[in-house]
Length: 411
Image (cartoon, rainbow, N blue to C red; front, side, top):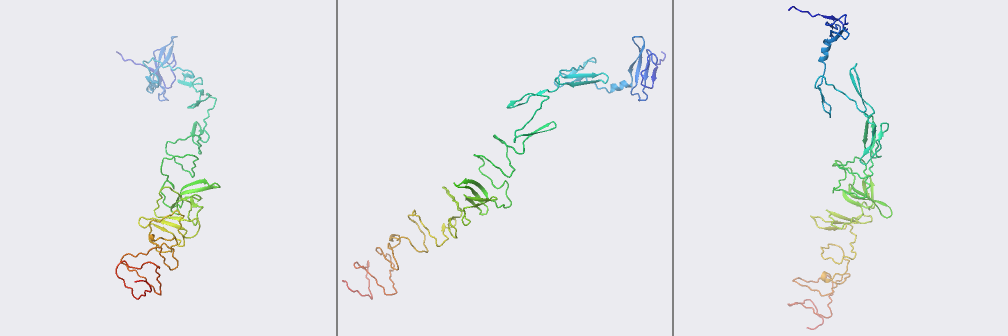
């Protein structure tokens, strides 16, 4: 077999070979694209056309091989919520169909496909507002949706495409409000206009939520308003910081949370404190009068380690019974003072007679019992007067009368 040579006509540009001149039926030709480094290089074959002329048909070249290398082809097209599209053969065709409000356009020159939604159905044309307690009227695309809050309860604002719904700085709730968590109020004044308040916590803490480290010299307690029939009054009960005591003022003054008693006398509060239960005082109860002056009080002292004492500091004062004191069943020792009461009967240690001056008068018999000396001693002339009748005798034994004169009588 002799060697055969296939000749291919060529050109350095990219122009398609001219049929009948550059290429005839059965010949091959190539446009090399020298200036483009062969990027658009194509190989042509001369074929016979219907009019028995020659036509140059591209059958290959670098231009096509590069296109094949960069061609991304999917065999399966998956659509969310729909069945997948699978290419079973090279003759399968993918058809894209438009619907209501969807327009599909193609361009075979630019090889593009465009999908466009129209107002016919691809765009929302109306919205009907609805809520848990009602519904509204449909709003078309030419209408306006207004998001409005309740005055002093909810406020709204719009920035671009964002609607913000929140609480205003000052909130007013006209109906019930239930808070499922903790409530913290960081303000200077809290006012509760309620006729009934119920608190489960058995203890109120006054003076702050943290332990103080320095004294503030302020009182702690509860102030209350009342009317005495002629004018309004302010009362207070609680801890008096300056007195370091629990106080009750029915008519109080308040100076920057420091309370005083407007009805005080001499610096002492006179508001009555009444209780029908036991009142336990650890040391001294001071009973103060309603008039000014020193020592106008009585101290009642009862200490577990000392005797119970009633102290009347004014030595010129008087202990008076209103008549309800009918008897003193047990007494101690009266060490000083002058008895100015009624006559004390003999069975209670008295004479039963109102004695005056220096005379001692017995209202009954004088009985001396026991082995004791009974003497009558005088320092000057003294008369002893015996009754006109009666007997002067001893119970037993013999007695001697010495230095005496018996004048009269029978022996």
